[in-house]
Image 1 (cartoon, rainbow, N blue to C red):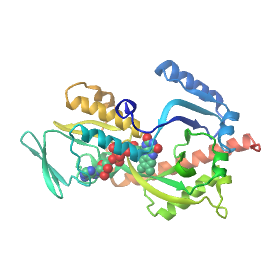
Image 2 (cartoon, rainbow, N blue to C red):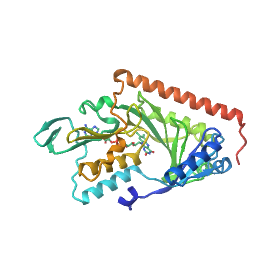
Image 3 (cartoon, rainbow, N blue to C red):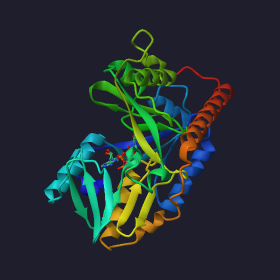
Image 4 (cartoon, rainbow, N blue to C red):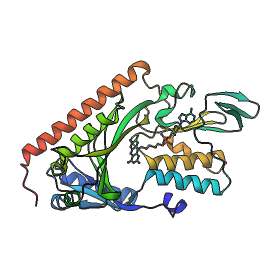
Length: 331
Ligand SMILES: Cc1cc2nc3c(=O)[nH]c(=O)nc-3n(C[C@H](O)[C@H](O)[C@H](O)COP(=O)(O)OP(=O)(O)OC[C@H]3O[C@@H](n4cnc5c(N)ncnc54)[C@H](O)[C@@H]3O)c2cc1C
C-alpha cells in the first residue's frame, strides 16, 4: 500500500529475521506454512549464510523476506504530509485535543488554540494518549522502547554487518537494526513498562546490547560509541492486538499498534477510512480483539513483570543454545 501511494519514498529492500538458538526445522516449516497459507515467499537461510553476513556467533538460522522493505520513518511522515496536503487536506501539527463533547451532528473538539466541529472523529493516539481520551485510555498501556545510533564506524561496521537488509532477532524483547547513512548502525531494543528517558542511560544500554552481539564494534575504549539515543511510547492492549473499531456512533479508535508497527497501522487506517466513507466493513477483521480493560494501576507492574520474565526466558534459551553448540570462530 505504501509502495502504491508513496512511490517517491526511498526504500531499501530486504528483512532478515535471525534466530538466537538453533531451530532449522521450525524455520523451514514456518516458510512452508507462509507459502501454503498466505502465498508469501520467504527464504530459509542456513547458519553459514547468516554468519557470513552477520559476524557473530549469537545467531543461528534465519528467514529472509526479499519483498519487505525498510525506510526512514521521518521521510515517510514527510512524504505522507506532502501527499495529503497536495490533495487539499489541512494538517495542524502540535495541536492537542484537550477535551471533546457530543454536539449536534458530530463532535465539538477543543484544543489549546481553538475548537473544531467534526462529524466523525478517529482516535489514533498510540501510546501517548492521556485522560482526554476517556473510555479509551484504560484499554491500553503505554510501553517504552529504545533506539541508539552509533557514531560513523567505518570499515569495522562493514566487516561485521555485510547486508543492507533490516535485521531483527526472534526474542520477545529482541533487537532490530539496520545500516544508515555515514556508516552508522541504527539499533533498536529493549522494552519496559516503566520508561527510562535519560539519553545517556539509553545510550549506555544500547552500547552494551550491541557489544554483546558484535564485540568487534566496541571501538571506543571497549565501548560502542553512540551519538544519538532516544525512547518512544507504543500503545499495547492486553491481548497485544490493535484496538480498531467504533467506540460510539461517529467515534472510532485506530490505535495500540505496539508489536505490530508501521505496516499494520497503515492497513488499519485504510480499513477505518473505508468504514467512514461507507466503502467496506473490513474493520470487522479486527473485531475479535475486544477493547478490554488494561489492568488499571496494576497494569504497568504486570506488564513489567511479563517483559522481565520474557527477557529471562530469552537469555536462558540463548545460554542453552551456546552450551549445546560451542561457538566456532567466524572468519
Ligand atoms: C523507539 C521505537 C522504535 C520503533 N521501531 C519500529 C520499527 O522499526 N518498525 C515498525 O514497524 N514500528 C516501529 N515502532 C512502532 C511504531 O512506531 C508504531 O507502531 C506506530 O508509530 C504506531 O502508529 P500510531 O499512529 O498508532 O501511533 P504514533 O505514531 O505513536 O502516533 C500517535 C500520535 O498521537 C498524538 N497524540 C497523542 N495524544 C494526542 C492528543 N490529545 N491530541 C492530539 N494528538 C495526540 C501523539 O503526539 C502522536 O503523534 C517503533 C516504536 C518506537 C517507540
